[in-house]
Image (cartoon, rainbow, N blue to C red; front, side, top):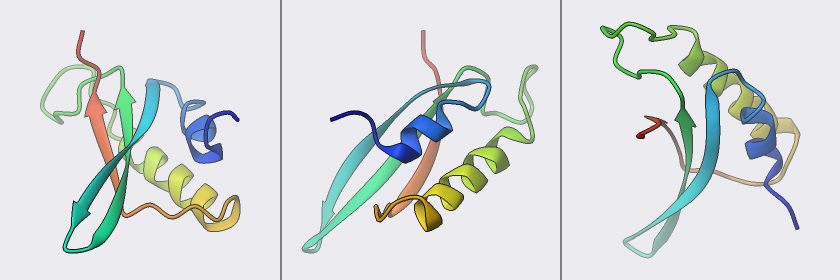
Length: 83
C-alpha cells in the first residue's frame, strides 16, 4: 500500500518536501494531524516566505479530503524543513 492520496497531491505543490501523520490521544479521542513540511521559511518576515503557499496547501488538502477520499483529519500543520 502506498501513500495517502492527500499526501500525494500535497507533495506535488512546489516547496512541499514531504508529509506525514501524527496522532494525539486526548480524552478518549484520536486526533489525526496532517503535517506538511515545506522547503521555505514559514515566518512571514523572512526572505523566501511564500505568502500563497499556506493557502495552496489548505485548499489542496480540503479539496482532496472533501471529494477524493473518505479520510478525516483533525488538524493541518505546516512546518519548515530543518536541515
